[in-house]
Image (cartoon, rainbow over all chains, first blue to last red; front, side, top):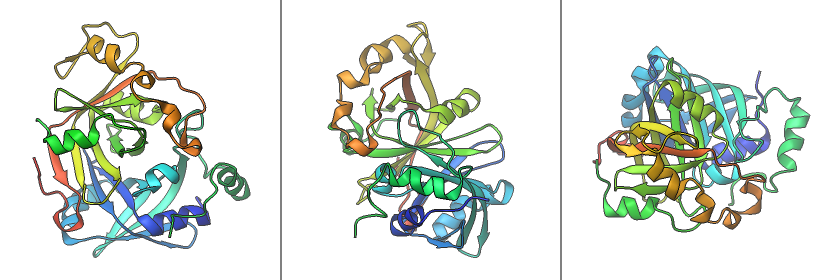
Length: 136
Length: 159
């Protein structure tokens, strides 16, 4: 099971995310949410507008897999991609993250972080980024 | 579909990381991938170009499912565009006359195949700068649709 680090949680909660969904035949749609709430080790909740629900509900109903990139400045500074299964509970998109990738451009791009021991993942990010979340 | 002047101005080469986007693709069975792209340019007012720098999963997806979505990530204020359309990658080694959606590989690689000659990668902040530059080609998205990702208008067509 994937376990998000405090830094990952801070960036997702601070600046939200770009969320990729797709039909089961691979036709993608993206929504952008400006904040999130992380619960436990790997549950991320996004509050959607009516328009956002309408945009993705068909995709989620036929294919729950989503991909997530941290929003805003997180695109640059929080070089992670999260993947997992999603469900809609009313207007809340609930994502259970089960894969975490590094997206830092270069030879570490696509390195899978959730398969590392948790302490190694924390050490990995502490040696690459100085911050622990988005600027206040 | 031609982009507006405002869109072209935002997406064309200016300075490193002035405009950062996400490119979302999907496998043919619906496994999406959302990857950051630090460099963009615009060709013929309707093609968004991005250098292929270690775009591993993106290329796997594009090899089987040639569609993508570019969303503006940073700066986010007031620019809430999503561009969707046929997406492919023009790799070094393809014949000059290789055609993707009406553009030729030779024309693209001659001008953008060595992106660092047009836009210095050294201008990127150290913590996101690639330690090795190994550009394999250029990712190309032909804009067929543009929609808003503003929460209240999400999915509403702009173009």
